[in-house]
Length: 96
Image 1 (cartoon, one colour):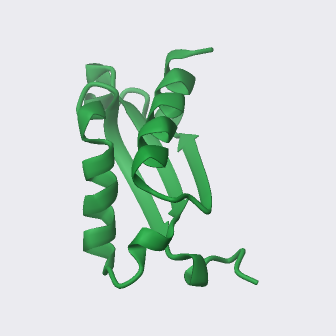
Image 2 (cartoon, rainbow, N blue to C red):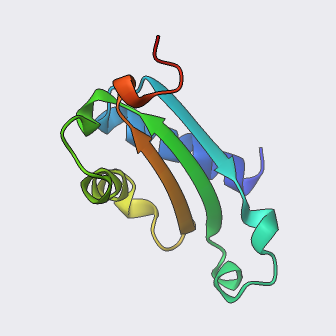
Image 3 (cartoon, one colour):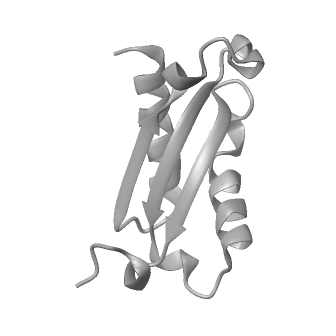
């Protein structure tokens, strides 16, 4: 398991402790940022899609803050950059 796969595993554990996840996908996009000044710190670049009922009634800023709060201990060492798509189950493309 490479270092970013381990980081993803630990992020998933922390997100599961806070949210009742309907869906979670964390992609490592670090390879797209090789040579970027922030990449030199060793933190990874990740793209996150999360679907959870806790986002009901929250705007995007509050949803992102909730995700950042859940992953706070990972910044800035493990995570340098994080792209977030946070949806409620009713907003999910998987809603049926």
